[in-house]
Length: 114
Picture (cartoon, one colour):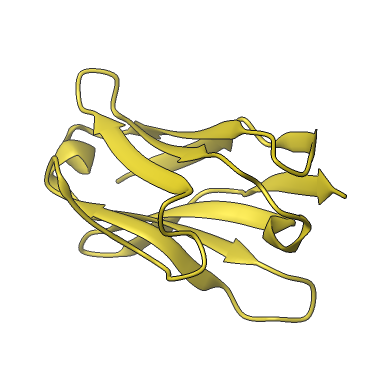
């Protein structure tokens, strides 16, 4: 069983930065691929960034060069560093771990004002 808790969301002005954290319980977390997703009102969740292993990463085109996903296995945590934030990044951000089941956190709100 894996439980995920996101934190680090908040309100920033355009051009600012935030770092989201996804803290997990469960020793297998370090072995699982983890993705950060976001959901706009009335829309389906979309993949923002994903990490498999320690350094195999991929990003949505809309965030390439601005967002960085990383993990610290000693802390059982995956991070999403978000720089150069834009108003269109405003959404609820979720982390997801892909194991025997798909594990989701509760989400954290990110609001970027112009």
